Image 1 (tube, rainbow, N blue to C red):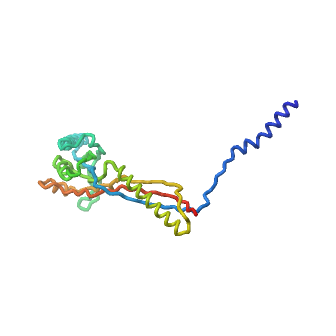
Image 2 (image 1 turned 90 degrees about the horizontal axis):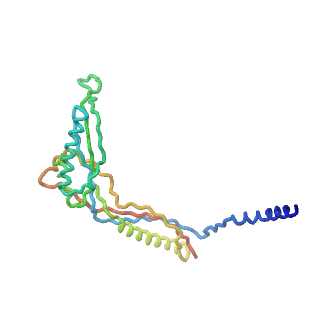
Length: 245
């Protein structure tokens, strides 16, 4: 009995020790902290152009609309591959089939919708790796039967070097600003506490739809003029510095 009581007493005495062992201590930063958000952008000439294109067909029946559409799409894809576009750079982006109705009131008399037939569409996303040929390739698409064109939109195939340059410039700018605040506030230096980053790798804005009139006029001996300009890769850093005396 005495041995059992002694073990119970020993166990009870050990409980506070276990509780102390689980306690964590956090030392808060006592120096003033400045938070900066810095964005830097590096621009370069694009080496990729992305164009959306496709064909639309109408027919009295759904099957005929799809059959006609398939024939025209085969012709378009064939023209693209013949022009040197690799199959891996041609991707189907959408296939649609819809019934078409006319809701127009005739002779001022309200009438129900009039069935017109079916419309089929097949859309492609085409990546062009030679931006100097974009204009002539747009014309090739139109001559091959394309009924709509989206784009082009330009980008850089490998934005990593541009992002690295923007990142280094942003960090240098943040340090310069932090040192300025430190000296202006009577402190000796600024010590880096944290960095977080967000970036955009030169993604272009969404392409605009071109009109059918543009596409018809483009099919001439003079290639459609296209100016690639430059695209930018941006890095935004959120950094914190502790001001030290």
